[in-house]
Image 1 (cartoon, rainbow, N blue to C red):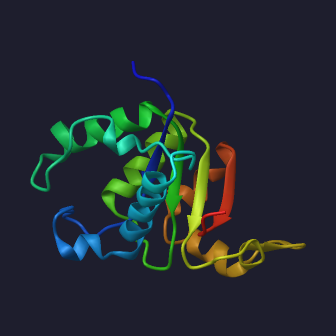
Image 2 (cartoon, rainbow, N blue to C red):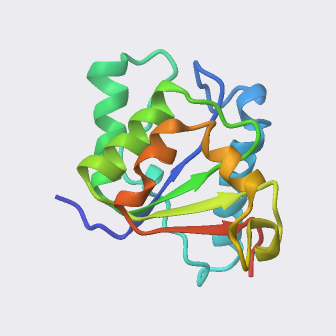
Image 3 (spheres, rainbow, N blue to C red):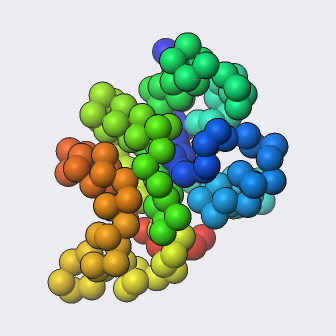
Amino acid sequence: MGYRNGNYCAFYVDEPFNQNNLGAASTPDFVTYNLLKAWKGEDSTFPFIDSHNKNYNVRDGSDWEKTLKPRLRERIRNSKNIVLVLSDITRNSRALKEEIDYGINDQGLPVIVIYPDFDSKADIADSNGIRKQVRELWDLLPIFRDNMHKVPTIHVPYRKT
């Protein structure tokens, strides 16, 4: 078993996913993930250890049950938390459902939700709690909405602070 020191970043991209395809690379949630990696690259103290770099890469045409799903699960098992990118383009994809379900319900990992559509804490919550427009984003990913209460979850705006 590997060390649980990584951050497993879960984000939406159109399926089938191909990291070398410009369409996938320009998907806003994937761009957010890439910026996290860039921030780490320019500042070694930035607290992001990418779990996706800890085992074999996966290919677009790989078999879901035999290759993709086991590799996602291995990465999640070697992580200390899930960093979920949740935006207005997020969709309930097979991979994202699997990542959140396995991460929360099997591994009990805490979740850090990054909202690329909001850049301040006041955009996410006020004295009355989480704002309606943020709660509506949870409906885009029912597996998260229905299970986030099972693990510690923090909601943060998208900015390097």
